Image (cartoon, rainbow, N blue to C red; front, side, top):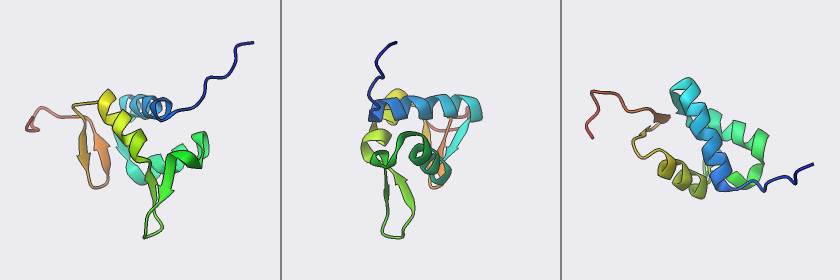
Length: 85
């Protein structure tokens, strides 16, 4: 049996990338809840308004994997042809 790989911010970012490929967008609040449930609380934090937020290192890794991603207030989406680069 292979030893389990440690879960890192990169692991979570790779999972987010797969979710983005499947759904075309990621709603930040729902993604944060999924990360909490699947990977644990070390990859999220609670804001001053008590909302779940994705850890900054995870977001950094996610953006490194997806340089053309568009961030909007609600979350992330794939770039469309009408988006300014």
